Image (cartoon, rainbow, N blue to C red):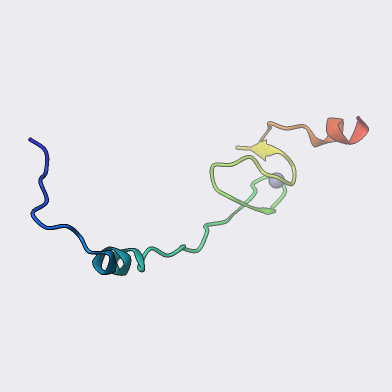
Length: 64
Ligand SMILES: [Zn+2]
């Protein structure tokens, strides 16, 4: 058995509900290697490291 709505949600009611969907402030953390502000659980854009390990080597990209 699935849910069976008795009444159709009006455009006004739907829009009033959705009016409260706002963007929150993004959480930034300091990179453990270089100290730059980065998104958590992401490889640092500045030095290309994650969890003190170099994932993306920026020095190679500069040579090519
Ligand atoms: Zn970094």
